[in-house]
Length: 374
Ligand SMILES: Nc1ncnc2c1ncn2[C@@H]1O[C@H](COP(=O)(O)OP(=O)(O)OP(=O)(O)O)[C@@H](O)[C@H]1O
Image (cartoon, rainbow, N blue to C red; front, side, top):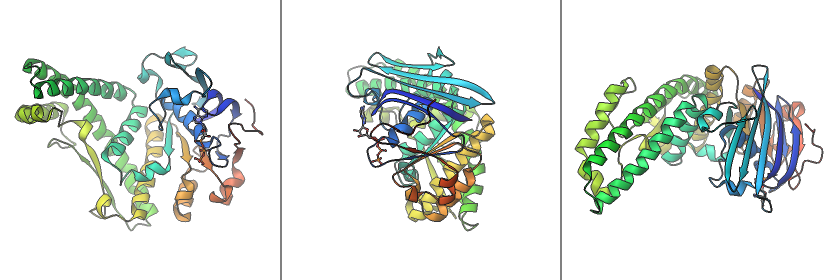
């Protein structure tokens, strides 16, 4: 799939923008603070309805305006799909084929995007939240129903935590309510964890072989899921549910004492091993980068496998962070099959052969003077 055109209105530092893109490589070039990342962010927003930089939609609206609009047409299975996001003080609207989609899960998945930014190099080294976000976003765009279950899980988790806090402070003794919320929580936890296991198996399939290739057959990558309960990836939902039930039963006092939910997918993590050693603890910076790159490339292949088309790739300021070898590997892999947006302050950061074939967009203070108008 690819994005044919993008229109921005009052978005960040873009007053009005109307661009046509190449279905190959598009390079966004500009000095610092001109609007390169804002453009990448707009494409990301079109896919996920939210930014990866802020949770406050208000920040996305141009300072002196009270609404913003992002429109794009995607081409998928040789058909055109218009997408639109409207932001205002009244909230957010997401339209697919000109029709407003009330449920997030009815919109997400229309446009598949894989984002690779310098923060992603932190995927291995960073905190567990970064890795959970990575799997949640990826599963969500392949299987939008996952977003629904995750949303329900988080909603119940919040209620349960609130109740545990009240129990801790002895403001209530409603243990029946705790049982009800625990049961509801487990129901969605099981679906979340089961979908994560399925995703992980697919991710492993691609990431391990890609990592092997980038490391020139020297390194064997392993990816483990670390849960807060003793569970096997082969366990079925019923078994997982029983394990959770038992865990919560045994630790009721501990949870009340701490005033929070101690078990569940919101506390799970991924652990990466190279040649059987924990990469987070023992890996060199290079090995951590190769792991992050392998995961991103695996994601691209996985989406192709599950959705039937390659996603759009956003490389936000990340090429300069990769050495020549890793950059070549990345660009050679995607060339000719994945529509890619590369942002950079200097064309010299991007391989010459790539620049030669790319469409170039020069950004200057929220405008692209030579834009190819849609
Ligand atoms: N809501 C907004 N309204 C108007 N301008 C904004 C808004 N939010 C951010 N900006 C401006 O957008 C610019 C930043 O753009 P962006 O983050 O895309 O920079 P960049 O070109 O990627 O730069 P760098 O190379 O430094 O990352 C800044 O000048 C900032 O002040």
